[in-house]
Amino acid sequence: MVLDPGEAREARSVEGGARESQIRQAVLASVVGTSIEWYDFFLYNTAAAIVFKDVFFPHSTDYAGTLSAFATYAVGFAARPIGAAIFGHWGDRLGRKATLIVTLVLMGVSSALVGVLPGTKSIGVAAPILLVLLRILQGIAVGGEWSGSVLLSMEWGDQRKRGLFASWPQIGVPIGLILGTGAMTAITLTSAGDAFTRWGWRIPFLLSLVLVAIGLWLRLKVMETPLFAEIVEKAAVHKTPVAEVVRRFPKEIILSALVRVSEQLPFYVFTSFALTYIHKDLKMAQGLALGAVTLAACMELVVIPAAGHLSDSLGRKRVYATGSLLIAVVAFPYFALLNTKVGILVIIGVMLAQLPHAIQYGPQASLISESFPTNLRYGGAGIGYQLASIVAGGPAPLLATWLLHDYGWWAISVLMVIASVITLVAVGLLADRSATDITDDQAYATAPAGGRRPAD
Picture (tube, rainbow, N blue to C red):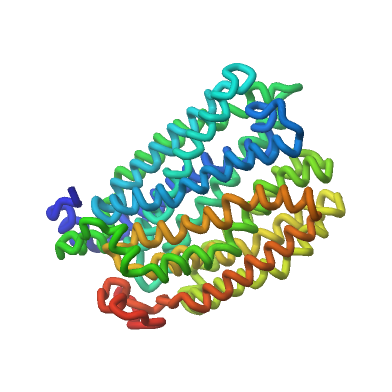
């Protein structure tokens, strides 16, 4: 059952002050909801790096235990394209709003259950098995969340500023990272003895339920986007949108995944793997590692929307390619700074590495979303975006751990340079629709690189 035509007409007819209010609510609901989902996701990432080895893999060596913890971490990424396909179907059938409510609840409940899951010493092998199952549910939820949040903001906002409006939900990543690592940092610093490993790490996971309640309240207040409402009025909703978008836009889906390689792979090296590297390999304080990642996330809060806004005037591809190229530039200096073992230089290194990620992440949402028509956009953008999770984000900490163990830190830097090359090629092949009217179906009948200016 799709959006009721009466509701669609109501969403389309909102004008003046009421429309401005809906735009603000849509942006806020997107940012808050995405922040909550990424808070839950990064909690798991942080816990996998610093505590899950002891709780769920206590009989493993440090190396094997770290690999096992990051393997459960990677499982969540493998589940994300599945979530993108499942919720992409319903997002292009029922609408953005209803689908986003389901993804938020699923993520919150899954994370809260991780917080009460007994360790291996209590229930044996069932503990890591249940951990993997909950991680899969987290991955499915995040897989369906991203495109819906981006479209809720982008399709309500000024179509001449799609880069800016689509970038607002993207700051949910650094906000979630700040909240997740910040919560773990606070618990780490205030836990005496082994209290953090025994029970302290569970508290931030349980707080997810409170945050989900806030997110639901905000999302329930937002109306469906005018662009999707227009599709409902035209009776242009597809019965099987995911199958349709895969059939019609396979190139755009594949390129959407490949343009993310230099954004996603280094990001999870700079965040999750860095926590292990700084603490266990460099023998520096865990609080320093968490604090450095948190400071870098604060910087991204400013750079992400700035880069998105800049792409509205300079074009998505130009801004995005600049960020990708910078990844290759900082790949070796990043580890050089970390290896000094000087606190301030480690912090500078982490923040320097996150800058190219933010430059890419700002225009990324609009670059990918504009590649698909409105009635196929939720599924097409989501699947393309999340496929990168399988080849880049998920394996990143696992690959980095192996490369460090067998070859040394320089091999990880080489991997990031390769990622940059892959992305630059993909960016060159993907059409830039910064100036295309995305409400015009004819814009997607061919493969234009430009088009008409977006309508007001």
